[in-house]
Length: 544
Image (cartoon, rainbow, N blue to C red; front, side):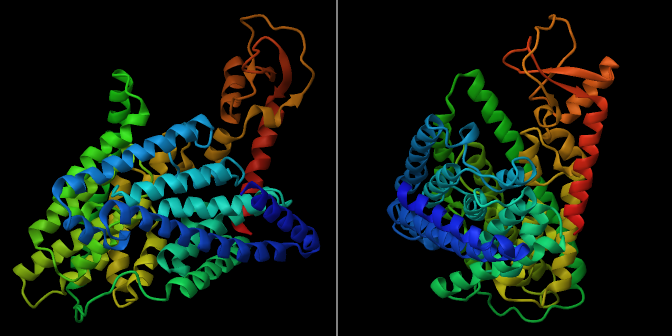
């Protein structure tokens, strides 16, 4: 396998040399290649989930509810527990061989971090390890989404292809967005949503210079996916009749409800993640025991309510078909939220895009059913509100109202709900920001010390390191213990704060491991010049 990867990289290097004079067109060409490669990777990832699901439930992931419902209670309960044991084994080897940072599988937030901090670089081993762990997790019934790991896999492929081909940092970030767009396009068969997701969530800008390559990658992925999997929406939408004028303000009310549900889901996941970590630290429980322990909880919930198992698209189809009573839908909203929070807090692999869609569909169908009981023949059917709930809940959780609106359009193939859907998504997102102040991805990044909501200026102060801007010099004489100094690992923001606190024009820089030996010098003027240059470069990239 290593030889094959090496041959592929050699091929791309030769291709890169031949295209070196093509400038921006080279980025477009590799965007198409990345789109096709990411699509094949996502198709393989979906098949891997299905293989695990066949062993766990006797059905593919797309029929996991039917498979789990036909099993004995204890058999269904055991599937996520065994899956958790396998996940723990993979985490052990991934940690031992340094394939994963922090002993956890990665997803969309890590792609955003790679774009903002790591210059668009993601390790191939990290991407493959995350894909394997996520396939085992989702196939064995863990309540999460496949799109997050798929986006990470697509971004990994983009990073591997462009790493040694002479692209600058801006081009690497654009190609990282190409991988993410291709993954969303292939996962949902939704090329337009793939483009907007990459621009809105991964890159955080709509610059014209990146729109073209990302669109090319997304279309390339959609073509590959439709060749192999066909061209049909993810959900079959029953006939639901026309909606009236009254349904738009009622959709706004549903958006308000979904905003509260999304906020509750984020807060529950946050509290549970922190609580699990604190309990594990106090009692000396290894993180390797968390997946099987989480599997016990997820398995128990799923054995009672199979609709909470896995990605959940079969459950959405059943909800759209009106197969669930209103009281069951309300229970399923609560159970899906809790099962997903447990899954994510116990280090299973997976994302939150699909759970957001599922939770929103259940909430919308219940809302529409209640309206039908209260005002028979006056409002639209529960199917109408289920589709609106899908967009409102997922848009609020992801903090991506534009791309999730397009996802619902492309998933359902129905554009007749445009106004009501946009109103609901906007209100749900507003409620989420009011109650939580951030999206799910930004919460994950904040746990790692990054607050991307501060804009480019905040990112630069936290991600540029002293070692990158200092004046280098050979190790000099030792410093006294009480002398002011900077460390190479300090951020630019920490350096400027230290300079202000010490009231110095500059300070010596030392290595963290050898705090008594000077390896460089950073002046206030040079630090501010580096900050201003980074701001200008960021502004140019976002607006050209």
